Length: 65
Image (cartoon, rainbow, N blue to C red):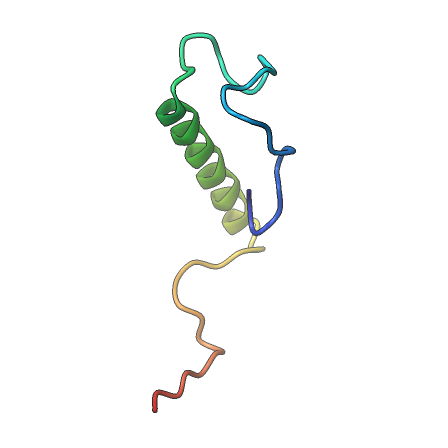
């Protein structure tokens, strides 16, 4: 998922589609790590284009009671 939407349709583990994982990195840890890296790269690209900001939102007020 990226920003609340699926990047690819979900499938059961282990993956039957060889394009989703390489043969040498079929552990769930390696797949999850690759997904996190891809997500980070996509977020950095959006930040570079000015389409996404990092940090706390300044336009939202929180009232604690």
